[in-house]
Image (cartoon, rainbow, N blue to C red; front, side, top):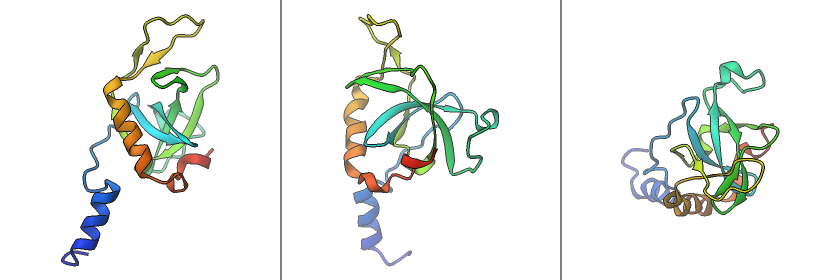
Length: 137
């Protein structure tokens, strides 16, 4: 409520709502979001081209990467798709780069290492039970 003051402002600041940055939800964009009991890197897909995607404006359809290390990801053999609430997305980021020293048969990728603390901070501030996307598909 406007004018009710401090309680709402404090809640927003504590939860990060007041300072939420703009997220690029367009198809092809990369995002960081919670998935199960960890955060993951994923790419937003075009919902109009995906039969099983939730068409609601509240969701994005994401193809999540497998996490191999702290900052090492790979595309799974079978796409890992999940309808994810836009409000659950932490932030968007540049596409991952090919990880140097990749020795497996599948290419490994890394995200900007400066974003790791940011992802950990977002993840630590929100209880796991509040993530809506965990059991969407």
